[in-house]
Length: 260
Image (tube, rainbow, N blue to C red; front, side):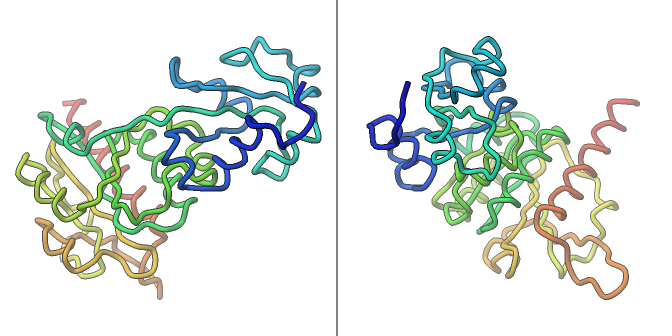
């Protein structure tokens, strides 16, 4: 049983939780909690750790691999949550290229530019799965995809929703358009309401930074600027909420087409 945090394994877990650079260099990240650990895809699990009290309560049968036992005090020090469940895992990252997401005959995609809040990013990934969105493409200056707060907010969707991170966001938009993706920007200057648009089979929706919205350069590359109508004195919605509104309108239209 591991009883201190100074050994190589525990130092590695601490680094992966705390440092984006370590996650990038090692190609791994950490997930916590029984539910998340159960959902780790076969082949992605690198290591799993369970506290002594967790194993006494649950045993190891529900876990996806053979856990290394750690003391309760070590687990409390490692955990990134206020109330640790007593189990965490090191998981290998899945790499996706933007082209693989928009090269096919049909794809509903969301392009996120400079989205900074980890909770927003995680929520968008979770809602993307719930609404059947085919993937997300992130500018490199978005919040770290594998930040523990992002991972928690996805509630497991990180394992199932393809996400690509790109250095050249505008260049990626141009390549998507060349592949037949019609681009819509969620924008305060939009002339048409989001629910009056017919979204084609190859659709891309752009969501911008929480405070500043989309850059002018990105907005200029879109085929249409689209707005969410507002009542009262509200000017705009939280980025994750706005994305979800678009996601479920696209989903509604898909369902209606399938019902015909």
